[in-house]
Length: 161
Image (cartoon, rainbow, N blue to C red; front, top):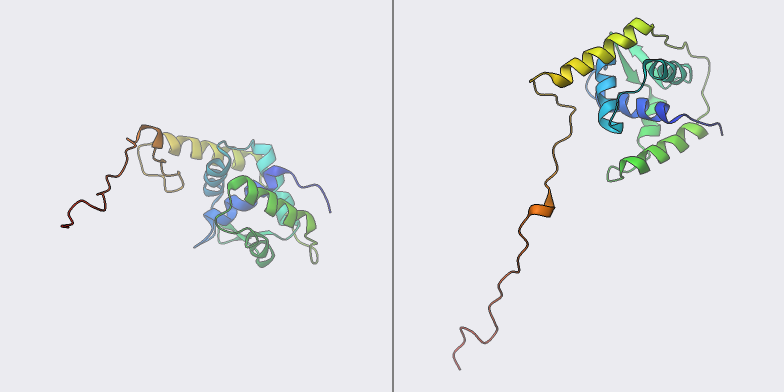
């Protein structure tokens, strides 16, 4: 087993999230990584993670975007859907550490300009008024919900003796 950086797991999860129906653009992967971990990874860490994952044969370039390979889809299928994010990250990180690549794969090398442009495009789209489908739905704050007891009718009430 080898040590796997956390950013590799986040980028693999982000690619899986953003490339469900079609190959994901780099901006979509950045947006999904922001959704998963709450912040955008640095450009050099993002580029290194994509290069490492593609060298292992887990991410492939296709039709102007990125997709998961069948090996990566098998690793992503391990954690159950109800698992919390931290638990999913730990399970996927274990799967990546145990993964043995089959054959040689060409790594995808992105330039600093491509990475910076994708991060900047995501940051500007986050500030725009348009609807971002990758943003989480707000959770209901249960603290302010009025808690009350349900009124139960007594067993003798309403019966005639």
